[in-house]
Image (cartoon, rainbow, N blue to C red; front, side, top):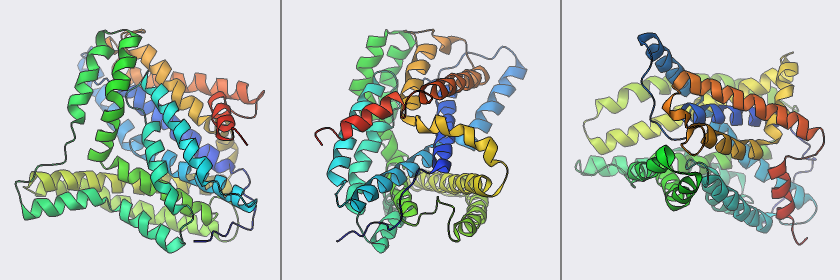
Length: 392
């Protein structure tokens, strides 16, 4: 179809940078409390520390797990829309450049796998390619695709198959075994051992896990959501956008209040293992989406309508360098926790790992402020941008 570009300029959206900073900070905290997918923790020194560690783990996962990733993914779709629309306003088609941009993102992801097997950039690159056909689609088609992927079609298919044939096995692409194959390199190997296993197993384990747990379809739906919100210009303070965000705030809170107990109760009410597993995955994705929308709408409203804007504004530099921060947390985290570095997995429980994550964010933030005072883009952002437009 013929694409009609926006008639208004797509200026820099400060609140999007703030949300991106919050998201990448939350992702760092989750990764550090997990010790970068190591999941082997020392015995607590006392009953008090055992209770504290469990409380820290449960609270961190409840507040951040799946929600920060969702914010980051939605903003990826928003960025795609803005880049495409900016070029369309100049009479150019950004889609070929975006495909090349996804090739570059895949290369960044492979670099990330040299340090951390939980990379999301490779998944983003593949899902980004799958989203390209919808960039110029009509709003009706875009929304239809968004709803389809949000409903978790893979899980729906397995629920139907399980109801027809209760002996149907749950979706299992072998991510658990792949994770186990990487552990010896993390626990005992050199950096080269970790890098080899990351390339050999990391790419497969990420995609297997993402498909098994609904993350792949959710990522596509969140990219589409970002494109849709970009078309509607909802992140700008114009028109009745604030009223729309207020409705989203209330609606998402009500949805989470309904979905969370359903997630806790409904799967256990089913005896068919396949159906139980798929219901758990589906409801988990939906509750995380609801909580993500609550976070996003809350931040947008605080930024545009309260004095909290002054508190939120300093987060923006951290969000502007999200790619650099994401890649550097893998290097820092690998050095801190794995055997090739400090080997802190032997000594650090959930609480101390979280505090190390906070320290990592603080160091990254200081670096961001220093770097952006001298450059317009972060180091990896500048490289990605330069390579995107190579040959033009």
